[in-house]
Length: 418
Image 1: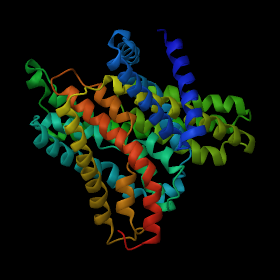
Image 2 (image 1 turned 45 degrees about the vertical axis):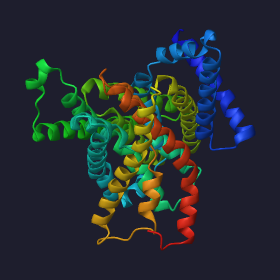
Image 3 (image 1 turned 90 degrees about the horizontal axis):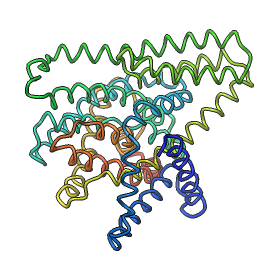
Image 4 (image 1 turned 90 degrees about the vertical axis):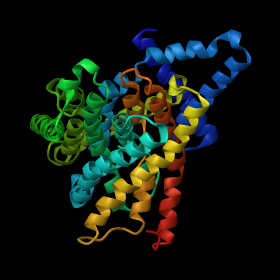
C-alpha cells in the first residue's frame, strides 16, 4: 500500500475506534483506542486460527510489517508529540522541580537500566550487555502515554510537574544510553576492537548528544521567537511553530545530537517565553488549539498502531512467561529510579505524601519502547526482547494508566502512604 493509503486507513480506524470507545467503553481516549485495537487484533488472530484458509492474520501482518513503526515514530511522529507536550508545560513550574526532574531523568534512568538489565539477564540467561539494552529501552517513561493520562488524573501540581518534566527529558536520555549499549552489545566480531569504548568516551558521547540537543532546541526556539515577535499573523505563526518542530528535529538528526531533547527544549521556550512575549492573544489561542489537535490526532494514531503491533510479537509460551515476569522487573526498576533521587533530596526539601508510590506507578511505558525494540538488529534475542517490551508496555498503559488516578485519590485520603 502507498503511504497515503496507509495514513488514510490509520486515521479512519483511529476515528472509528475512538467513536466505539466514546460510545461504549468511555475510557480515556488513547487507552480506549489501544484496547479496541488489541481486541480487534486478537479477534482477527482467533478467526484465522479457526479458519486458517482465510489468511486474514497473514494479510494484516503483512500490512503491519509494511509500516515501519520504529521509523514512523522515532523519525516522524515523535518530534511533533514532544513539541506539543512541552508546549503546555510551564517552565516556571518546571523550575521549581528541576533538580528532582534532572536526577530522575539521568541517575534514575541509569539505575533502572542496571536493575532491569541484571534481572533480565538472570531471568533469561541473556548476555548482560544485551539485557542492559532491554533495560535501557524499557526504563524511560513515555511522554505521550504519561501526558495523556495526566490530563485525566487529578494529581497534585508538584507531582504532575515532576512526572511530566521527567517524561519529557528521560526518553531522550534513555535513547542515548540505548544507542551506546546497542553499539556495544551488537558489534560484529570483526568490529569488536573498534567498538571497545571507555567510560569516558561514553560520557562524552552522552554529553554531546544530550547537551547538543538542548542547546540546539534553545537556539532554534529563540530564533523562532524573535521572528514571531515581529509578526502578527496567527496562520503564519502557527506555520513557524510547525516548521520549528519538523525542521529542528531533522536538523538535530543530521547534526547527531538528541532530537527528542531538542524538541522538548524548543517546545518549552515557545510555550512559555514565546507565548507570553511573542504572540498576540489571538495567535496564542490558535497555536494552542492547533497543537492540541495535533497531539490528540497523533496520540490516537500511535496507540492504534501499538494495538496492531501485536502481529509483530512472537507468541511462544516461554517467551510470554518471561514477558509477564518482565512487568515486575520494570516496576522494580521504576521504583528504584524514583526512590533513590527523592531519598537523596528529601533532607533538603519537602515532598508530597505518597510521591514515590504515585510516581512509580504513574511512570508509564509506551510507543518509544516498542519502537526501540523493533529497531534492534536481528539476533536470537530480539524476539524475546520485543515480546517482553510489548507486554510491559500494554500492561503499563492499560493497567497503570487506568488506576493511577485512583491511587492518587487514595493516597490523598491517606497521606501516611508514602
